[in-house]
Image (cartoon, rainbow, N blue to C red; front, side, top):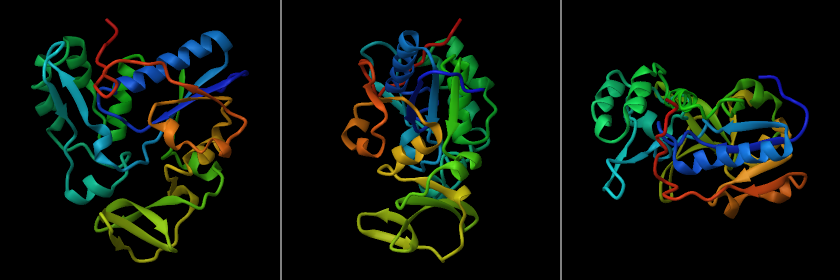
Length: 260
């Protein structure tokens, strides 16, 4: 999609469920409202370099007021689940069909049909295809943090992760104290063998993400969720006008409305 003149209205999010969480839907809605007022383009910074499997947990309810049901992808092995970036976590054979059999009691027929139609082989691609099927990406430019071109174009940052091979998988290791480290929990870390790496392997941490993203996207407006407002380093991008996303109820639950 070719960028258009005028404001660049941006928001960022990790893949956040195979049906997106309602707070992400609210970001899309906020962006479209701003675009109607200001013109310009909408850019979705899709942070698919994140590795946390909890990000894709999807909470559904069989009916209003019903008990929540939490679903997620399964993963091919423990190492991939814990440390591989979401754009490289593979969707195991049979996962889609097994989960699709559970969906009719939780979502409408259009959602089930769209879910069954997705053939993506990685977690991040699967989520993105679902968001596209829901019409959320119509007229929106998607910029992925895993994209080698974006990584090459981004400014250097001191705080970052590196995608490196390890035990037959690619893992996202934190670069700190001049070493590549995997966090096992608490104060426990595994230090990986030193290997050379290039910008194409680098993705930012939470604290360096805004400056890294802005060096490529040059957004004029950024829509921030409730959690982001607590940690965004606004001093790293003083040229941006920050906008709070529109409120939405049950923000952590999944949005499942599909165009008919």
